[in-house]
Length: 342
Image 1: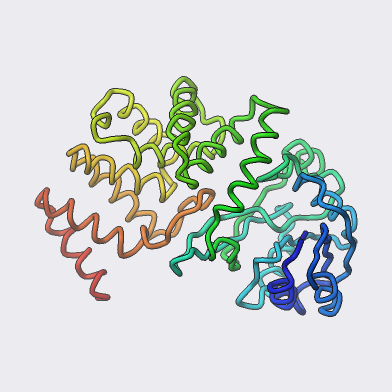
Image 2: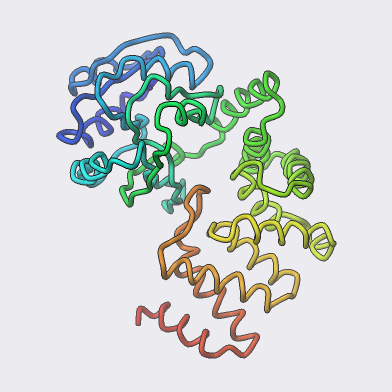
C-alpha cells in the first residue's frame, strides 16, 4: 500500500524480482508518478482514496492477492540480499503458518535499529488486519485458519528508511489515528502502551504521564497485558528523574521488567543503566551479564526495536565499567578483548 512514493517504489519492487510470483500494489491517492512507476516495474496496481485506516486499506489489498503465500513490504522497505532461497525454505516448513522477519530501521544519524515483525504468512481470507494504525492481524482469524500451527522466526532481514529523514510528521499522523482508535475502543492495552511510547518519541511533555499510567496498571497485573509494556518499562527506567529512582515503585518496575522481559535487549540495557544510576552495581552487573549471554547465544527477543550496538560495543563498555568497579577483572579482561577485536 503506497501513496506519493515514486522515489522509492521501484527499489522496493525490484528487490523482490525473481523471489515472488507477482507484486500487488494499492495506491491510495498519489499525485506523483508512483502508479506509473509501479506498473512499469511489473506490479499489478489498483487505486482507492485513502480510507483513514491502515487496516481497511491493507485488507482491501489482501483481497486482491492470488498466491498461496503473502509477503508484505512497504514502499520504503527493500531487501538488500536476494530473499528467494530463504523464502522458499520457509514456505516448505509445514508446521508454520507464517514468519517474523527482521526489519532494520535506518535512523537520521546513519545508525539503525532492529525489530522482528510478522510479514510472511499463508494466504487465507480469515487473516485480516485490525486497528486504524499500527495494525495487527487478529489472533482469532489465525486460530480459526491454522489451529495448532506456529509462527516462526527467520534471520531474513530487510531495510526500512522511512525514518531516515526524521519521524515527527509520521508520528503526529499516527498519533492522530491512534487517539481515534482509543476513542472507539478505549480498553486496549496495546494501544495505550503504544500511545505512551509514541509521545515519548515525540518528546511530548505528556509522555511521562502516559508511561506512568500504563505502568501503574501493569504493576497490578500478574501477567503482561501486551508486549508493548517492554517499551513502557524501558522508557521509564531511563527517563524517571534521579529523585525518584530510589522509590519503592521504581524498584517494582525493575522487578516486573526482569520477570516479564528477561530476553529483551532494550529492557536489560535499561535495567543495567538504571541500577548503575541507583548505585546498585551488583544488580547492574547481573543485567549486563544476562545481556552478554543473549548476545553470545543469539537467542533474544526482537519484538521491541533496539540498537544492535547494545549487544556489542555499548555492552562491552558498560559491562567492563561495572565489572571494574566490583573487582571482576575476569569480566573486564574479556570486555577489553572484544573491544579490541581480539
